[in-house]
Length: 419
Image (cartoon, rainbow, N blue to C red; front, side, top):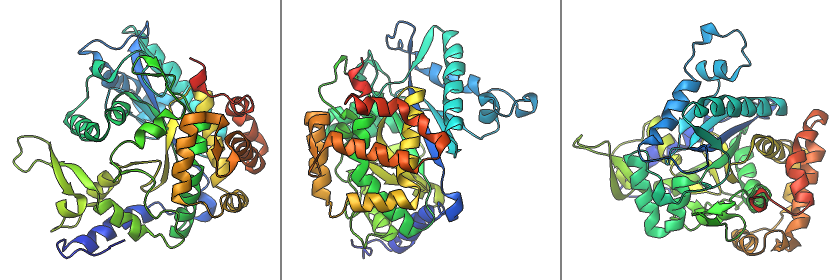
């Protein structure tokens, strides 16, 4: 990749700023064995119908209520309200009013399940006060994108930008809900090794964790909808990061890729609005000045690749699912991508896989699901292999937490079949 641009005097500084974000994720080798989980929830009426106009503010109200206690008033430090109030875990509101719970770092599976089940119980009880419910599915169960208001100007600019490439991709960002699972790394080499292997495994992870049952009020037309629709968006910021499977790919290469992508929006200079749309690349937008750490992090957060890099490696192709399945997905990721023996086995399993092979795998899975052929093998056989490898590399007390997803794989089903 071109790391220099004569019309961008600050380009070297901006590559360094982005690399600094990546390097801030370094953890000692004995401390990089945790996972982080974000889970999106749809806030709906009690009868599952979409919120009425004006009710979208209830998502922010719900998040405020959940975290609206003082840590000093809480004796049980395992209570989810204490953890939110103390900043150990967090909540936020998505573009279409999704309620997102942000948890981690998690080392033990029981912590994942306890936190997410507690959040579901507490959030549901608070939502019930206004005749609302929280639902975990990959796409809104009863609404089309046109039925749901966008939360803010940034969300509207992003929606309009993506819609120019694919209305379906814009719809997904608007009213979809995901499970984002992230993990640490110990060095640049470790990060890029994991990024490469997860990129290759991502299509099968998407199949195992497929939970788009309904799309735009109709039965989902095919498997792995999240991954497929994400890939219809801006090719400069979706799908596979170019070059990521190459042995000599570096943090600097990733940073150059970010700088060459459209920025989509930037702060308004005149102060009349917080954000305005722009056709400039990030490199052009920051041509004369180095990005601040916050600006570098914001730029990295605007990408929709199957797997992204910030100060963690983020798996973006997993749908929102009920808590037991989210816990199983977290353990699947931990069992596959944390320990050296599993990484070594994956390198052997995925030897000589190229970017075009990954693209072909995604297309085949969208068309045929578990009946597809992926990397020269039946998708069902590869899903079995990944599930078995995770089992081998998890501790005894972690293995049982895989059971929710393992049962689906065994019967060649996904949650998307259940609606």
